[in-house]
Length: 135
Image 1 (tube, rainbow, N blue to C red):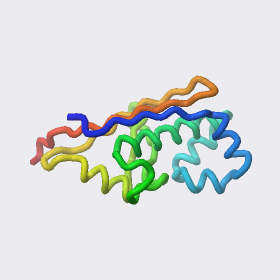
Image 2: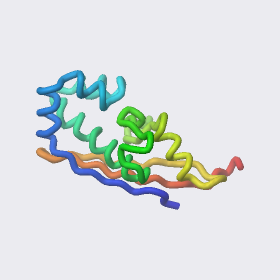
Image 3: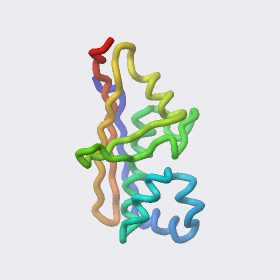
Image 4: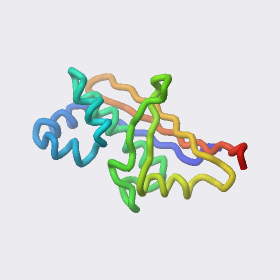
């Protein structure tokens, strides 16, 4: 069953300006070390950061909290599955909120779709609760 859906559209130029103006202060506040390493390896850093920013916003919406109620930027990390598909790793307040959303006897699966078509980056997040067969 679907327990949360979120989407976000991010202007890549806005992220580019934040990178230029605030540099590491911005990236360290919003992104995990893994996300920074992955984005900083790219020739075009801003689109990579913008996709991740949009994913975090979409995830916060899917959790039903936005960036409040103990959910912080770095509680949500965009990572890749072995297949290369993006997903999110949640920690802290985001993980606690996810646990509260998922009914007993179920486990969460986060589906993430990321894209960009400059000047925009877009993300969709769907939180699915799957029956846990081990229960």
